[in-house]
Image (cartoon, rainbow, N blue to C red):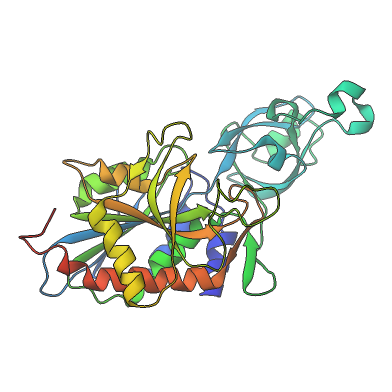
Length: 357
């Protein structure tokens, strides 16, 4: 499992450029499912047919990571960039990146004016994206273009998987490559009564786009998104605002959405939520309940597809989300796989014709 996580995390696949991860997922699952296909938008849909039970359950994890695009090349060869997904400017400055061209993948660094050359009043202010640029070692726009750099080339963080102590690991793009790992492990070993559609979705970070189209095609009776939950078990975080902790089990979302209202997100369906909680408690799997203000997942689009789909979110607690140094505990990953597999193997109890929502 750790080896697969390493391959998924170190693959570069920002929103709209998911091929590297799609290839890994296809190779991992092609011999373990009854059907595998790619839709027109790029979602990878894997089907495992059920036994005698009726119904369809969709499990989704997004392949894309936050990234950047080349916006403009200065005449001196420095690159200005746009964000693909949600960044905090302070986490971007001075990071190492990879610029992906049709010719090669080249390293670069994100720079700005050093503090020594800034007036006193500017030293105390955060550096904003408009003041940053990427240095790839080019001496002119023409030289950068000769290397294949063009407007629209994708850019990703450098981020090897690093093992810390106590089963903790660090890397980029755990959001949501760890969800892809959980999806792959579950689809490989689950033995369901219902038909399970495992969807590795595209472009979640820029508006849940792949979830919208894939759910319309699958038309499931129930949906579960597998993602990450923002842990707050480190200095400077008010526990009342972020009570999720590493090592305490997967997080089951009660609701998510905008900070001021929980609008625009998901209120998990009682049927799916109770199925997750009951299964965890019956099998002694630790879990945490989460109300997340400030974001949402593929489950939002799943829930609103066609006539509506009962949906919920199961997440792996993760620190420092949307940075190149995200941290999680592998024990939480194992428990997420275990819980989701057990849920899918008993979901037919909830989807009999007379009880189907």
